[in-house]
Length: 374
Image (cartoon, rainbow, N blue to C red; front, top):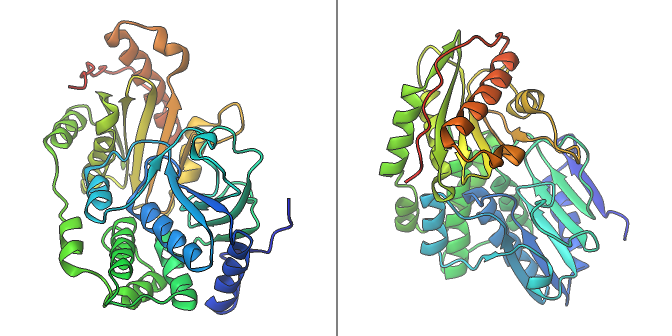
């Protein structure tokens, strides 16, 4: 495997040009070859936008075959709308082999290959571009990992400015700019958490965006199923000082994003600054979402301390400044056939971990009855 071209991080100094140039140098190794751009977990607007942008730049640089792959469902209705309205070509995969020939991998909005993708060991990771905090230094020929931006889309706007500027009268350019703007908005909570670099990136692509399409993408409607999960979260809410948590029972895989929507709702309560909502998703995983506006809470570190690591040393939880999530295989608990009993076990384990992490000793309480996903 070749030595890295360059590793860049938040601490890297200088103008955007060296970063963009190093990114281009790495991509040049894939000229005339095949590149698989991998999204980790359930694709979100920031990751999707960055993937199509890297594909756009790679195509300009002569990469002959480009596939954008993901492993877990595009589950949120807004994200499905993004893929549909922009006519994006994404491919759900479980193995590299089903893609065909793959010479290199590229990771966007992530710094580790999704563990659900098999047979990646012998394929070189060419580039990693991300804004999430890494526990250990990522390994690739080119790494651009920045913690001072609100979205990975900001980094890709910078690359575009240096390598392939977008123009408003080209349909593909408008599509990419629209996706990037939507990714910027969603990952910065409608720019409430944006940094100066994010605002500059938005300004650079503002005139290229399809405004009508962006308005369609930005309509934040709440589905009836999300309302139902929010109601469950309210009925199960436990508050300890300025920390809140709620277990919402069983949620179908297709509605997993309702857990995050419930957390988004609860954190708006005036007497709390951090909340966690969790449930059993698809009868396979215990999943939860953390939301916070406390400057002393680092979601990634907080969740890692609460839930620990898997057998390969990977943290069950991760996140960024204001939000995080965790996903724990239900494991041997899945042998329990009685859903009421299963939920009691899950509720006790998760509630105990969360209370201890928040500085409270667990106390006996009422266990919320499980609600089966419809």
